Image 1 (cartoon, rainbow, N blue to C red):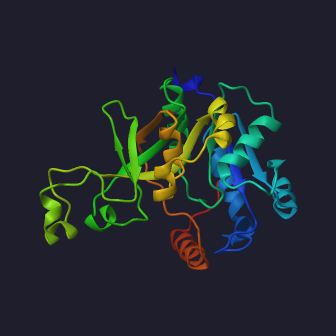
Image 2: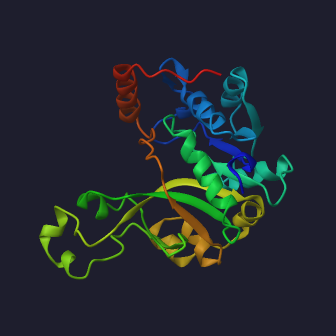
Length: 267
């Protein structure tokens, strides 16, 4: 598939009732709502269609105010994946369409990474889902349970995701020295939570029973592997900055943008 032939859609789930940062999509960064920054990043990726999926009228009003397409969804969804499945059904997207789930709290997400994940799915017909990873350089990250690790096969398909330090270096990890510096003969990857789905998989996903490992690790992507859905994982060409989860994250990002003089992309 040529670069110019790549066709994909983007859905941006946006909830108002965030536990750690209520009203998060509408919080301001550089004078504009977070959701607007994310929407502009999504549009810059070259997607044929960008939709904000929400269950809140306040988000719909603001999003439509800056020109976004909005799909109102049920407030009962347990996950963003379930919300995306409803969007795909409501909008009548075909089973072979590719949809990228862009989180509404990542205003610095590189548009090129969104496109890379979509292309990863388009060029791997055996996969139902595609995502990305980055190489881990610091030992602390290998052992951090909040940094999800992924191990891939020779073709880049996921073998397993875990909060544990996988692969486990049998010799080096017996020593406390490994906590300070990763062994030179090992390679570790951190998963980036950006997903592209085929619509057929997206529609099927809410009906799949949770996997035992999914419950143990609290990692929803393990459900796909458990049910035989292949996940292609590309090494990201560009590492995304952290998203916004808390008031402190928002303040930090606002300060960084002010120092760098960063401006929102023009329409």
